[in-house]
Amino acid sequence: GDSVTQMEGPVTLSEEAFLTINCTYTATGYPSLFWYVQYPGEGLQLLLKATKADDKGSNKGFEATYRKETTSFHLEKGSVQVSDSAVYFCALSDTGGGADGLTFGKGTHLIIQP
Amino acid sequence: SAVISQKPSRDICQRGTSLTIQCQVDSQVTMMFWYRQQPGQSLTLIATANQGSEATYESGFVIDKFPISRPNLTFSTLTVSNMSPEDSSIYLCSVATGLTNSPLHFGNGTRLTVT
Image (cartoon, rainbow over the protein chains, first blue to last red):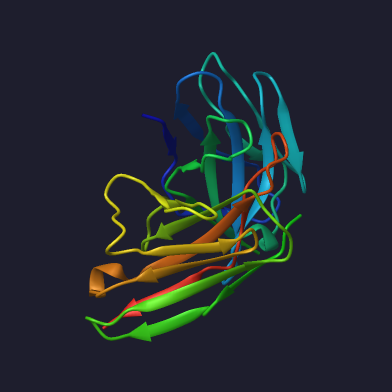
């Protein structure tokens, strides 16, 4: 079955540091890939997505590129801020739009220190 | 994007009781889902709420424990029955609008503590 593996947290960085959160997946076919973010006390919000190989999703300075050859969708940001502190979830969908539900990774807790 | 209201936002319940969680969407949506997020864990899909028919449950989840209703295209409920401390989790409603490649939208969740 489908699965998503992402790096364990918490990840603690200083403000303005470079961020990478690794995500790899196992799926049949050609899934769509997503990053969701959960800020403290809030629900999940879609951060970015990519629906086919070599697509790059981007939002709020975050980027992730769909790498079919390495089955990866690593999240990156060049300069993190304290406000980026949250839990980040990598997820996939077999049907492109999540209409069959999503398979999530375990989440990575990111802590940014001033 | 769809706006999802989930109630209650949190509750503390005694073991053996049941709690019904409501999910209201501000527009008609094709798919509604219920997820569980156990402490320190990822989200696990409980079931797909089908309008006008019985919900479709994932492996490990059964209707007797998690009865679900979906009377129309904007509303669903999840009941956690005969609760035990192991049911302490965040329960999240999510919806898909049905548009191609549109992502799931999530409510803010219900934080349930069973004592």
